[in-house]
Length: 395
Image (cartoon, rainbow, N blue to C red; front, top):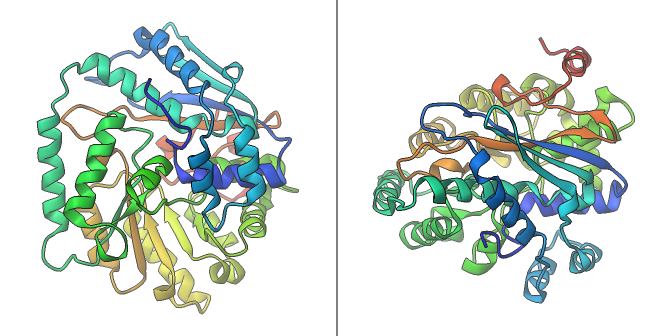
């Protein structure tokens, strides 16, 4: 059994789920799976593993939150008691998930149902697909190579002049496996130190945060702002509606805004003086990170907000050398945070699966993101994408 706890997911799933419970409990959604490197050299078809994937999803749906897990969630200052009470009754339901083979040899995964009851599927299902794939294709994993690569990363981070550079783990969904994920985290804690005194800031994984005494990290994901396209009063105001709904829920807590659902230019048009002051910072997840950081710092200055009081979080396909470059460019000019995913938890010498599960519909209406990295876009309705570009004035 790959997933043994419903806490084995990213924190932002719970923070978004709480908003759904309180503000959008009737929303109906559809998510779809995509393998971005399907058919690429070195990546096998996933179809042969459908039976195993289905069995693991069935096992996932047998889980419920344990009392200790609920107590841990209840101890977070931004988690409300009624939400924890709801989780105490919560179960994932297999009827909302469909997994089948396509003639191409790829697999189709569709998650469809109430947002409140499907939001927790994405991360564990992706982790299941990854672990099933790698335990079949790499039956004797080269753990020594993985340790060698991790050691090299740690060596770079411990170089002179980088003592204030902190990284975080964002790698649950694309990890090689749960056991390797835990080994990576324990090694980082031992070698870099954790928390305020160390270079390892924490993890997005709630289970490992609880188990290893780490800080759980996360706020919102793309699906939240995408759903607001169908839930808000007007499409053009959907990004503003999403930020205001978030602020209504958290009252200044969890104040990191996601910047790339409509691209950086559209984000800055909506992220006015009010949001500049209200939110603690923003997260980069597509496009050139150096250009993004410079634009955001300049935007703060234009709005008479000191960038040194704000946090810029970088989380797009990061490697340690890229993090060091970003740190050197922006250190002292703002507060910095770096979240590493695949390169941290799935770097043993094999080509990782570039897999995602994205929301494509909400309340029967297409939803999408218009990323600054076009390959990250995922929508099956070209007319809607064209309309979205027109509404948000995106070339």
